[in-house]
Image 1 (cartoon, rainbow, N blue to C red):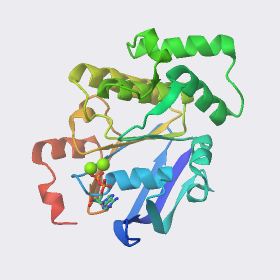
Image 2: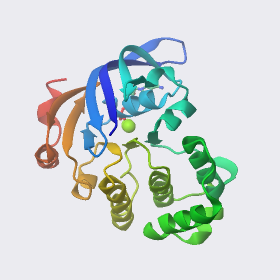
Image 3: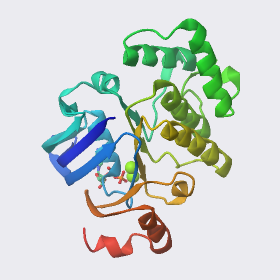
Image 4: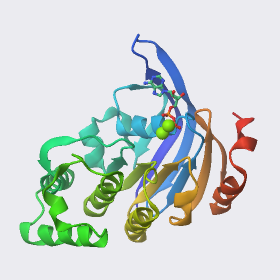
Amino acid sequence: MSTLEIRDLQVSVKLPDGELKPILAGVDLTIKSGETHAIMGPNGSGKSTLAYSIAGHPKYEITGGSVTLDGQDILELSVDERARAGLFLAMQYPVEVPGVSVANFLRTAKTAIDGEAPKLRTWAGELRGAMEKLQMDPAFAQRNVNEGFSGGEKKRHEIMQLELLKPKMAILDETDSGLDIDALQIVSEGVNRVRETGETGFLLITHYTRILRYIKPDFVHVFVGGRIVEEGGPELGEQLEAEGYKKFLVKA
Ligand code: ADP
Ligand code: MG
Ligand code: MG
C-alpha cells in the first residue's frame, strides 16, 4: 500500500526573463494505491503544472508545500530517482528518443526501476503480452521511441509502460487527447487492467469528461485557478459533463 501526499503545493513557472509566475496556489491531495482520482479543470488552470512539478520538470519552481510518496520527500529527488521511487508520469507531449527502440527503452526503464534486469525468458513474453492486449503490431517494438508515432501509438506506448513498469503512482495528463474512440477504449481498458491489480494509484488529468465514461474515477477534483475548488465522487464528473465549469469559475 502506497500513499502520495501533496500538501499546500505552491508552484511558479520560470519565465525566460527569470521572473516567476505563480501558477499553483496551494494544492492538497492524497492518493492511495488502488484509488483513481480525476482532476478536471479548464485549459490554463494549472493541471499540467501540477503533473510536471511532481515529475520534477526544471521549468517549474516549488515555492511552498510538500509532496511525499510513502513519507519520502519526492521534491528532493532527481527525475530518475522519482521514477525509481515508483512514480510514473505520462507526458502530455511525449518526446522522441532518437535511435532507441521501444523494446530497448522499456527494458532499460524496467531495469532502472527494479534495480536489476528483467529475466530474458519471461521479459519477451511480458512485452509480447502487453502489446497483444493493446492490439499493437509486434513490429512496433522495433520502432524508435515516439519517432513518427501517431497520437494513438504514443498513448498505447504510455499504457504499455504502465503495464510493464507497474508504478506505485501513475499521473496521466490528457491521456484522452487526440484519441479516436477505438483507441480511447483500448487505452482505457489498459488503465483499468492495471487498476484492477490494486497496486497502482492513478491521477487522471483531463479537461474533458469523455474518458471518465471508460475509466470510472473513485474521486473527482475540480481544478480552477491553480487549486482544487470542489471535490466529490463520480457524480461530480457527471455534473461537469452536463453543466461545464461555469459555476466553478466564480470560486477561483
Ligand atoms: P492546463 O494544463 O490546466 O491547461 P498549464 O499548467 O499548462 O494549464 O498552464 C497553467 C498556466 O501557466 C497558464 O496560464 C499558462 O499560460 C501558464 N504557463 C505554463 N507554462 C508557462 C510558461 N512556460 N510560460 C508562461 N506561462 C506559462
Ligand atoms: Mg493546457
Ligand atoms: Mg495541460
